[in-house]
Image (cartoon, rainbow, N blue to C red):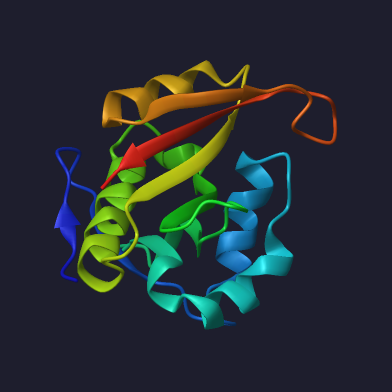
Length: 163
């Protein structure tokens, strides 16, 4: 994929995660952005569905600035679906359209390479109003609310997007 030039002038490339080359950069974004560490999933997910573990890179600085970590049929009991385990953008690069670029590329890859997948699911903390608004503006819909979904006791909304 060729770099995309955003309105801000930032040049971004969305590409497949490469293990171990991308590990530290993605782990740093995870640490800065999410309460849960997904580091233990990077290597197995890069083998299982390599085309669905995506990294956003600032091509000028060669810096990892976002990622999305996805599993096929990751939601137990739901066939023909995918589950976004994590999506995060480095704090210095938020509100520039990086998250939308990551989801756009994910949707395109699912429609092209995984045609049996009909739905994308994700979970979002009930207090993360910015993320909830972002996903709903993208077209995700609320499926259900899960009380005490996270280990620290917070609930989550399960959202879905039909492909």
